[in-house]
Image (cartoon, rainbow over all chains, first blue to last red; front, side, top):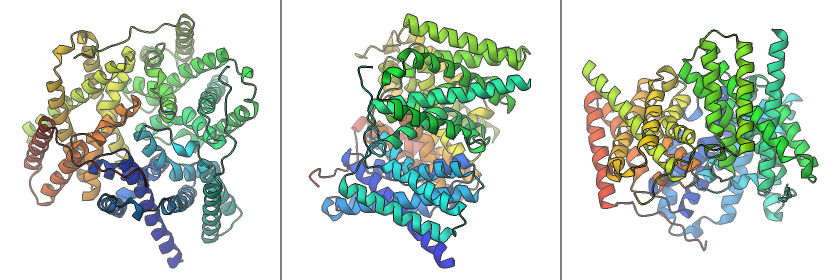
Length: 209
Length: 209
Length: 209
């Protein structure tokens, strides 16, 4: 079990780095100042978990463990330094890492809510918030409609991952197995959606209403 | 008194459904994916109350009572299903319902703050936040300047409702009567503003400054 | 020491008024309704401190001391009344006051975090949030990319001020002296950046990636 906790811990830090990377790259696209890059990387990486912890009224995770801040700072600095050769970060790597971060954060968020005694519906919502809110804030700060609301079933996968994990746990599946099943399925589904460019049918209102 | 609490409870759920509806319809306008519709409906419906509870450092209402989440989900699903015939939701119904939701949420927010011992000025602010913040987040996510900041005295009415309720309560008017007076007046004022297209004189800065 | 606390207290209220002014003027630029002006002034002035207090899980400062709300209301009303002659508020005065507010709020935020026992890295982040988050929310509500992310090393100075204050405190410099040194240096640096139009080299990604 020690090994498993440790595995989750490293995956969590990896997810943090990945989301920080996506925020830093977005900052690059909008020509922000280097410290603006750090701010956007941080908001993307810890925004979702911060909202989750505040709503659950539990201590915010990165206030307890500042290592998350160091991971973000290191990621942002790397991006600033090596960005002159953006080909070093192939788009495929970014999308795949982001998909893993999404799956992982949704599970971590749902699990934390269950541990704190939240009802299942709330745990699903917390998984979704943890997975998508950071990216939403990133997009809002850059003045674009959050892509996660419209693209390749991103929000769908966050809700699915939260729901699957909560469902497996309510069936008394162990935390370890529920975590692995959920991450593998949500990650695969997201990759499949990216490569097939799958979207759910757009929900469209006749503007002549 | 049981009857009155129950009446407020149902009005609260109705207000939640109405704001969820407005978020879902906005999502339709921007061609979001179906689960993006659910996310936007939820943010609109519970955003204001969530910020209020977090600032007051009291347990967030929908974490305690997940029925709010079910109301939102049901509303979003209904909208997705029947939206092919948008004429089923006449614009007039939407505006009237939204006006009722605004009045109701402003009173509920102010009352909750007073119950928790907040000073009157804070209670007015909490009423305003509860009434308008969800719609503001909805508009920000859709990348438009929140209409409530500029249109038909929307923010004005939220502040007015909070102030009137707090004022009546400080005059020792009973909760029930203060609630009914405030909702009726704020609701009427908003309807009057909508039908007469009333706005306060725009506050405009000479750009040549 | 009484004198010093009192000095900080008045500077804090002054910073609140200055940020409220910047929010109100922004509202004017976007032709908001008068109460929209009040809302935007409030969000700009207390947004950063509110997020700080919520994350630190300490009572939100303006819920405890509603005088901040009165300062904001008075500032917004003054702006609405005298705005017909915008030359009464020279742009230079606005930029200088805003620079002072930034330096002061960054120090206040970092100091509050340290008092609550937060680790140094967290205290720096809290200083940054207190200094810049209100302005970011103001810009997001007005549908522009937050200028503080891209202009004249604004975020840089907030991070610098937080870091300097925390560093001085860890060297056992007294609160008073650390406060004065940090405010003077951060304020001067910001003024220098404004007058010289200094920016850090924009961090730019080759779009052909």
